[in-house]
Length: 179
Image (tube, rainbow, N blue to C red):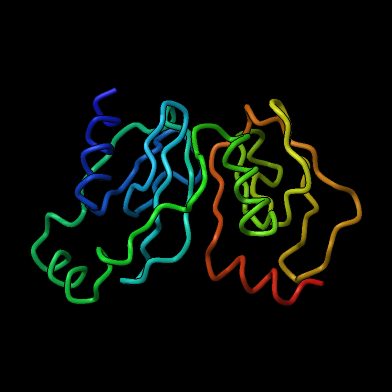
Protein backbone atom coordinates (compact mmCIF):
# COMPACT_ATOMS: atom_id res chain seq x y z
CA UNK A 1 0.00 0.00 0.00
CA UNK A 2 1.52 3.26 -1.14
CA UNK A 3 -0.33 5.19 1.60
CA UNK A 4 1.21 3.00 4.30
CA UNK A 5 4.74 3.92 3.18
CA UNK A 6 3.77 7.60 3.10
CA UNK A 7 2.27 7.32 6.60
CA UNK A 8 5.35 5.58 8.01
CA UNK A 9 7.50 8.40 6.64
CA UNK A 10 5.05 10.96 8.08
CA UNK A 11 5.23 9.23 11.47
CA UNK A 12 9.03 9.45 11.49
CA UNK A 13 8.97 13.12 10.45
CA UNK A 14 5.89 14.04 12.55
CA UNK A 15 4.01 15.37 9.51
CA UNK A 16 0.38 16.42 9.82
CA UNK A 17 -1.72 14.20 7.53
CA UNK A 18 -5.29 13.86 6.34
CA UNK A 19 -6.59 10.32 5.89
CA UNK A 20 -9.44 9.87 3.44
CA UNK A 21 -11.83 6.93 3.72
CA UNK A 22 -14.10 7.56 0.74
CA UNK A 23 -16.49 4.66 1.33
CA UNK A 24 -17.43 5.49 4.92
CA UNK A 25 -19.87 7.89 6.60
CA UNK A 26 -17.09 9.84 8.38
CA UNK A 27 -14.70 10.03 5.45
CA UNK A 28 -11.67 11.96 6.72
CA UNK A 29 -9.52 12.53 9.79
CA UNK A 30 -6.49 14.76 10.36
CA UNK A 31 -3.54 14.32 12.67
CA UNK A 32 0.01 13.12 13.06
CA UNK A 33 0.53 9.36 12.62
CA UNK A 34 1.88 7.81 15.83
CA UNK A 35 1.41 4.14 14.87
CA UNK A 36 1.31 2.62 11.39
CA UNK A 37 0.60 -1.10 11.44
CA UNK A 38 -0.71 -3.69 8.96
CA UNK A 39 -4.25 -3.49 10.38
CA UNK A 40 -4.45 -0.02 11.97
CA UNK A 41 -3.17 3.52 11.68
CA UNK A 42 -3.34 5.69 14.82
CA UNK A 43 -3.33 9.48 14.53
CA UNK A 44 -2.82 11.98 17.30
CA UNK A 45 -5.64 14.28 16.25
CA UNK A 46 -5.26 17.98 15.61
CA UNK A 47 -8.23 20.33 15.74
CA UNK A 48 -7.99 24.11 15.75
CA UNK A 49 -4.21 23.93 16.25
CA UNK A 50 -4.51 21.77 19.37
CA UNK A 51 -3.58 18.10 19.72
CA UNK A 52 -6.59 16.35 21.22
CA UNK A 53 -6.58 12.60 21.69
CA UNK A 54 -6.21 9.82 19.19
CA UNK A 55 -8.16 8.02 16.53
CA UNK A 56 -7.39 4.62 15.07
CA UNK A 57 -8.64 3.61 11.63
CA UNK A 58 -8.41 0.40 9.66
CA UNK A 59 -5.51 0.59 7.24
CA UNK A 60 -7.59 -1.07 4.53
CA UNK A 61 -10.22 1.70 4.65
CA UNK A 62 -7.73 4.44 3.75
CA UNK A 63 -8.23 5.50 0.14
CA UNK A 64 -5.76 8.39 0.22
CA UNK A 65 -3.29 10.02 2.60
CA UNK A 66 -2.28 13.63 2.09
CA UNK A 67 0.25 15.79 3.90
CA UNK A 68 -1.34 18.92 5.40
CA UNK A 69 1.62 20.74 6.86
CA UNK A 70 3.42 21.26 3.56
CA UNK A 71 1.58 24.60 3.50
CA UNK A 72 4.02 27.23 4.90
CA UNK A 73 1.43 28.90 7.16
CA UNK A 74 0.35 25.64 8.78
CA UNK A 75 3.94 24.52 9.30
CA UNK A 76 4.77 27.91 10.86
CA UNK A 77 1.82 27.68 13.29
CA UNK A 78 2.47 24.03 14.18
CA UNK A 79 6.13 24.85 14.92
CA UNK A 80 5.44 28.08 16.84
CA UNK A 81 2.70 26.43 18.92
CA UNK A 82 5.09 23.53 19.65
CA UNK A 83 2.63 20.94 18.37
CA UNK A 84 5.35 18.87 16.75
CA UNK A 85 7.16 18.71 20.12
CA UNK A 86 3.98 17.50 21.83
CA UNK A 87 3.32 14.56 19.48
CA UNK A 88 3.55 11.22 21.29
CA UNK A 89 2.29 7.69 20.80
CA UNK A 90 -0.44 6.46 23.16
CA UNK A 91 2.00 4.22 25.04
CA UNK A 92 0.54 0.81 24.25
CA UNK A 93 0.46 -1.71 21.41
CA UNK A 94 -1.83 -0.73 18.53
CA UNK A 95 -1.41 -3.59 16.04
CA UNK A 96 -5.03 -4.78 16.15
CA UNK A 97 -8.41 -3.68 17.50
CA UNK A 98 -8.04 -6.17 20.36
CA UNK A 99 -4.62 -4.84 21.44
CA UNK A 100 -5.71 -1.23 21.01
CA UNK A 101 -8.85 -1.79 23.11
CA UNK A 102 -6.86 -3.58 25.83
CA UNK A 103 -4.58 -0.53 25.96
CA UNK A 104 -7.58 1.82 26.16
CA UNK A 105 -9.03 -0.25 29.00
CA UNK A 106 -5.72 -0.09 30.90
CA UNK A 107 -4.80 3.55 30.28
CA UNK A 108 -8.13 5.36 29.75
CA UNK A 109 -10.47 3.30 31.96
CA UNK A 110 -11.99 1.91 28.76
CA UNK A 111 -13.47 5.22 27.57
CA UNK A 112 -13.78 5.31 23.80
CA UNK A 113 -15.96 6.37 20.90
CA UNK A 114 -16.48 3.56 18.41
CA UNK A 115 -17.70 3.94 14.83
CA UNK A 116 -18.96 0.98 12.82
CA UNK A 117 -20.03 0.22 9.32
CA UNK A 118 -23.56 -0.97 8.82
CA UNK A 119 -27.05 0.28 8.13
CA UNK A 120 -26.95 4.11 7.92
CA UNK A 121 -30.51 4.17 9.30
CA UNK A 122 -29.16 2.95 12.65
CA UNK A 123 -26.64 4.56 14.97
CA UNK A 124 -23.13 3.73 13.88
CA UNK A 125 -21.41 5.77 16.63
CA UNK A 126 -21.18 4.53 20.20
CA UNK A 127 -19.74 6.29 23.23
CA UNK A 128 -18.91 4.72 26.57
CA UNK A 129 -16.64 2.35 28.46
CA UNK A 130 -15.24 -0.80 26.91
CA UNK A 131 -15.75 -3.56 29.45
CA UNK A 132 -14.39 -6.58 27.64
CA UNK A 133 -12.64 -7.49 24.40
CA UNK A 134 -11.67 -10.79 22.82
CA UNK A 135 -10.41 -11.73 19.38
CA UNK A 136 -13.86 -11.26 17.79
CA UNK A 137 -16.03 -8.90 19.90
CA UNK A 138 -15.98 -5.89 22.17
CA UNK A 139 -18.49 -5.30 24.94
CA UNK A 140 -19.25 -1.70 25.81
CA UNK A 141 -21.36 0.03 28.45
CA UNK A 142 -22.84 2.94 26.50
CA UNK A 143 -23.77 6.46 27.49
CA UNK A 144 -26.10 8.68 25.46
CA UNK A 145 -25.46 12.29 24.44
CA UNK A 146 -27.24 13.50 27.61
CA UNK A 147 -24.90 11.57 29.90
CA UNK A 148 -27.35 8.78 30.71
CA UNK A 149 -26.05 5.23 30.95
CA UNK A 150 -27.95 2.78 28.78
CA UNK A 151 -28.97 -0.40 30.58
CA UNK A 152 -27.95 -3.05 28.07
CA UNK A 153 -24.29 -3.48 27.18
CA UNK A 154 -23.49 -3.36 23.49
CA UNK A 155 -21.64 -6.27 21.87
CA UNK A 156 -19.97 -5.37 18.57
CA UNK A 157 -18.05 -7.60 16.17
CA UNK A 158 -14.53 -6.19 15.80
CA UNK A 159 -14.80 -6.76 12.03
CA UNK A 160 -17.52 -4.06 11.90
CA UNK A 161 -15.43 -1.40 13.70
CA UNK A 162 -14.04 1.28 11.38
CA UNK A 163 -12.69 3.84 13.86
CA UNK A 164 -11.98 4.17 17.58
CA UNK A 165 -11.32 7.54 19.24
CA UNK A 166 -9.79 7.79 22.70
CA UNK A 167 -7.92 10.11 25.05
CA UNK A 168 -9.62 13.33 23.94
CA UNK A 169 -11.32 16.12 25.88
CA UNK A 170 -14.79 15.05 24.75
CA UNK A 171 -14.34 11.61 26.33
CA UNK A 172 -12.62 13.07 29.41
CA UNK A 173 -15.71 15.20 30.09
CA UNK A 174 -18.04 12.20 29.79
CA UNK A 175 -15.76 10.17 32.05
CA UNK A 176 -15.69 12.96 34.63
CA UNK A 177 -19.44 13.60 34.78
CA UNK A 178 -21.03 10.21 33.98
CA UNK A 179 -20.84 8.25 37.20
